[in-house]
Image 1 (cartoon, rainbow, N blue to C red):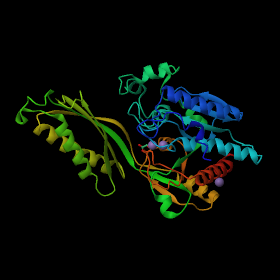
Image 2: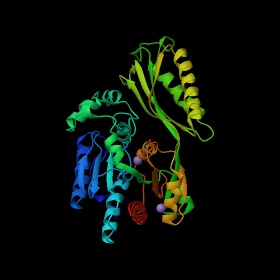
Image 3: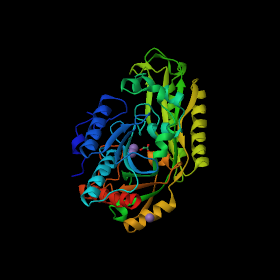
Image 4: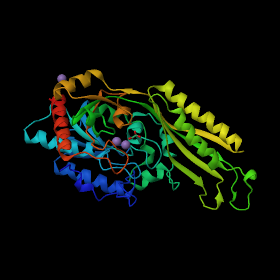
Length: 393
Ligand code: GLV
Ligand code: MN
Ligand code: MN
Ligand code: MN
C-alpha cells in the first residue's frame, strides 16, 4: 500500500503515465483529494496567494516544521514524482498521532503548485513565486501550449492573479522544510538502501531556441532553395549531445515545428534545451556551446535564431548541519547528490531544507516506469515521521 491508489485514476495519459498540470481540472481533482485527506485528519486547510495548499496540525504559525511536495507531473510522468512526498506526509501524521505525539512547534503539510513546469514551462512555479525567485509580472504572462496565460489559468482556478508573487508571510511560516521524494536514479538501488538523504542538486535551467525560416511546399521547393528551421534544430540536438561532457547533462525533450505538416517545410521551430551541470560556469559553458552551434546551423540554413532563458537555478547544497542531524536521527542512511530539481531546492536558499529519497528499483523517472515498492514507501513515511518528530518536539 503506497497510499497513491486513491489518485491512480486522476490525470491518466492515454499515451502512458500521467499528465497532471497546474490550474487544470485534473489539478482541481488532485487538490480536492488532498484537502479531503487533510480535513479527514482534522488538519486546517488553506491556500496561499500563489495557490500552494497548506494543511496545519494545530494552529498555523511562523517557524513551523513543514513537509510536502507536489501533485503535478511532467507530460506522461510516473506515479511517484511528487505525490509520494504528499502521501508520505499524510502517513507521517498518522504514524505520529498513533504514537500519541503532539508537536511543540507548528507543523504543516504543503503541496506546491506546478513544480514540473509541465504546463507553463517554468519549473517550481509555486515555490519560486512564493520566494520571489520569479517575477510576478513575468509569471502572469507565461503561456501554456494553447496560449492561455498563467493569469487567466489562475483566475479560472478561482485565485486572484493580482495576488501572485513573493509571499513573505508564507515564507515566514517555514522554519525548516523537509521534502520526501522518489529517487530519480539508481543510487539507493546500488547501495541496497531503501531510504537516503540528499546532499545537493545540479545547477539547471531551460532555454527556448526559436528558429525562423521560410514555410514552403515539400514537393515544389528545390533542396537548394530551402530555409528549413527543422534542419537547424536537428543540428542543435546533436550539438547538445556533444556539449554535455564530464558529468554535465543536456536534453532536448520538446521540439515544436510550426505549422507542423508532413508535406510542409516548417516556417519556424521552437526547441527547448534543459541543461544541467555542477555549478553555473560549467552550465553556462554547455549552453554557450549549444548556442554557438545553433547559430552556425541557423546561418547555414538562412534562418534566424532567438534564444530565451526560461528559468535557471544555481547548484543547491542542502544544509549540512540539518542533514547531519537528520542522519543521526535516521541511523546513518546514504547521502546522495541528484540532478533533479525540487521545490526543496528553491527553499534551500531561504530556510534550512532537507530531502529524503525513497529507492526506485527501475532507476527511471519522468516516465511511466518510475517505481517504488510499497515496503520502501512505508519505510520512507516512517523515516519522515521520525524526522518530523525530531524537529517538532
Ligand atoms: C524536475 O523534476 C526536474 O528536475 O526537472
Ligand atoms: Mn520531476
Ligand atoms: Mn518532483
Ligand atoms: Mn537534533
